Length: 157
Image (cartoon, rainbow, N blue to C red; front, side, top):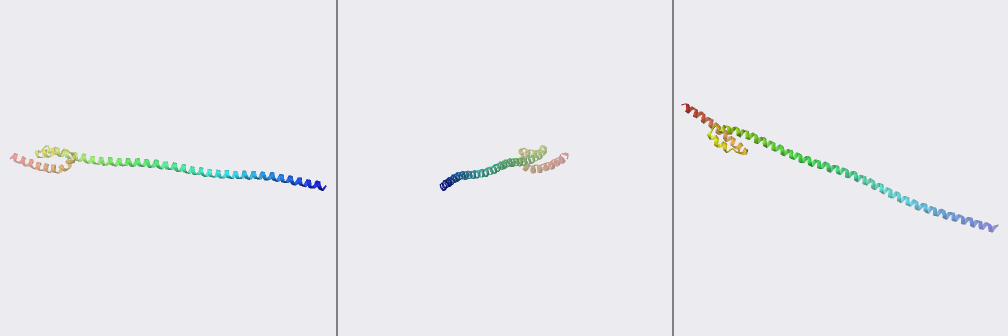
């Protein structure tokens, strides 16, 4: 009976070792699977971080495009404002020239009644010179009126 018992004990021990070896291989596969899952989880976290970074960059790009559009619009408005200022300056200059022309026309009409003023009026052919000539024409008109009054006095005598 002792011999059977050793064989049984050896068989039991052998069976336990086989079971332990099988369990060891299973654990090795589980550890390998766990390591693979950990690697996959790390990759997934990296991809999530990359996706978040990509979304942030996309948002920044959209914001940048909006700012570029606003800058372009601002430049357009500045150009329009500059053009408007030029037109306002031109309109003011034109009004001044019209006023000068009107004044010159009045003086020319007065000059047609006086030979001395006729000579001065023919030289007032541009609006730029009209303003300078106006004082001379006014003085001459006053003198002509004085001469006409004097001539009228002497012609009635």
